[in-house]
Image 1 (cartoon, rainbow, N blue to C red):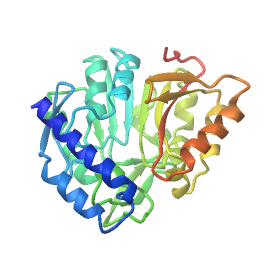
Image 2: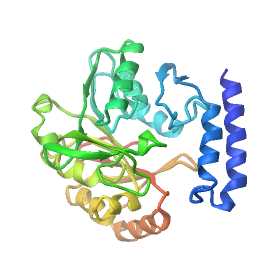
Image 3: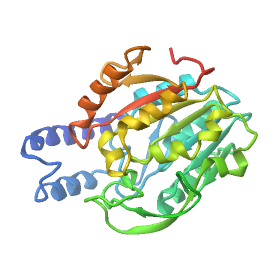
Length: 302
């Protein structure tokens, strides 16, 4: 089954490579046909990394076509998360990283998994139950700067791209709870070792809402998506998000998926590095990368 799905995925990627010069990502007359064809090849479940997963209706991560989604990132998380750790999965979606981290922390560790979308949260809970994990606390809420309620705008084609601000891809919307982590009672007094965060441009707001938590956990490491265009659409300045972390003495590392390397942002080169990063990933709205922020007493990722 693995070879078959990988072969199918290669066919889909070939078709996409042919259509890309025609603007398949932007051309409204081609995109629906392409997505309809790809969806016809998909299934409602998949086996990935030893886990059985119930997938969203569009299989937004293409997991039924290939198990290779973010393999580099998953392998890094396995290296960084240790047995007995307490970790946060902010923007858990259907739970792939939650499952990986729950396995790594073991029965003595704990994963707090935050997902605001009702449908994705239901699948997240189903996947936790299906895989027999009892060390995960599920929270149906978005993580933000304030505790309260907000509107979640749903992407009808990609459930991994729901956002707390409207975009051209937005369809229906739902009201969801928001949590400021500094106000979240279950985390108070608990050492936090690792945070994975992927919230489609709302990273700046989430960080501001956990400033106290980060201050009391100087060894924490934050693995997060850095998407300049998404941050700007959410009303944040990408440069300011990075400077916010640097002012709190976080060491920053850039994860290069192309050659599977990790590069430290050396002291004294922050300004030039940030300029290069914003130039490379800020020029096109779909480009993003992953960064790791390490607290003052945290372990380097090498």
